[in-house]
Image (cartoon, rainbow, N blue to C red; front, side, top):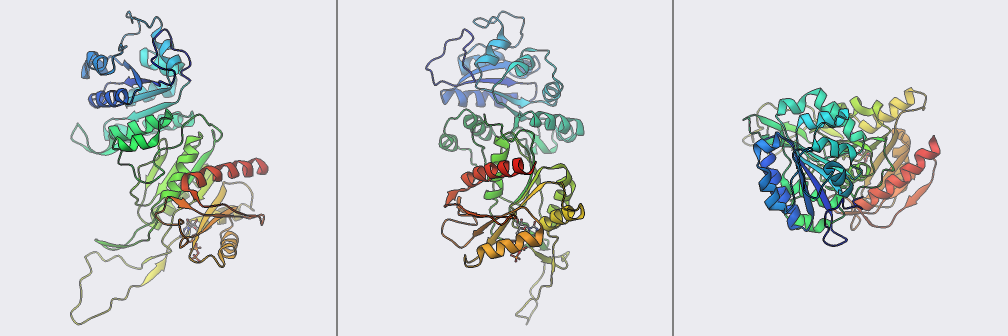
Length: 444
Ligand code: CTP
């Protein structure tokens, strides 16, 4: 990656080169900030603009910010870059396209190369990171989502978009992800330290927001479904029942799979974490919503990891108005009913198929008190009909809810038990994918 410099001067062997593709949307102005911040971090930024982007922002702005020539027209004289798209593709350690319009996403998905940016995108071998930005209606169009899914499958990483008020006045998904978030993802993919990205003010929470540096495609072609976080079961318009799950373990698992080239969907309850780069996040609130989202996707995945702390019970009725205190009454009785057991539903589907086919099923068992941990996990494994239960004692020091570390035991359907030391959750996730790779090889 980035081994040849295509005739340009490199200042220092360790210097990283980012080709920043800027396409024609109003968010193009935010790419100036991104180019500036990357340059300040010592990255050499080579900007390629589409002609439409050059109508939003003047190429001279990027030239001044980066100190590098800016390519717009591939047939124009580009000093120092005789065949600009090949030279830039060769030197790139990362191709970052921000903002990426629906148009460029469509062209890349179709393999169209009709300008300097799309020809570079077709020639590049470095990781590709897209930060889409467009109108909500465009973002939601099936064709755009299909194109993104195609690109994801080919290993392209996607950051954002965010939700909010768009330039067109509409509210919804389609805003360019915050510049700090794109910067953090880019620096991480470049192997520049994560701490620095955080210092730059990413505001990302936990250990799971950015995947390990790309380059390992050992899970390419895998379709992975993960649940994470708690669920919230409404009681009335302002109250809900929930639990202490932070979602960190599930997010780390999703991020680690995505970083190895898997196509990952993360069905997430409400958490305060950034979506991992390249992962499709389906946000849900209740156990029923999580069950519906999983049921729709279960038959088209290769591995299902149920890391969510799903509420086992929900209030039997949701009051339409806020529950008021009653004069003279000191207690309130709630009637709770069972929620669907999502993992057991996945196991049941397999049972109905005679135990054949379908995804590898992985559950988590969060217990309090280590005494019967393995026995309880074994019981859960059999009851739910899964291949592996990852068990931990959430009351042990360094393990469980909200922590960045975890000490887990792997209890396999075959009877083996593996106990790992206390590890960072992202390391648990990395090792888990190593083990699941071996397991899948053994199964096929
Ligand atoms: N799980 C699920 N749907 C539920 C409850 C749990 O998918 N409604 C999954 C969790 O994501 C986890 C595993 O099942 O992977 C274990 O969850 P846990 O709540 O510990 O198990 P239970 O079967 O509810 O056992 P117990 O109540 O005895 O702890």
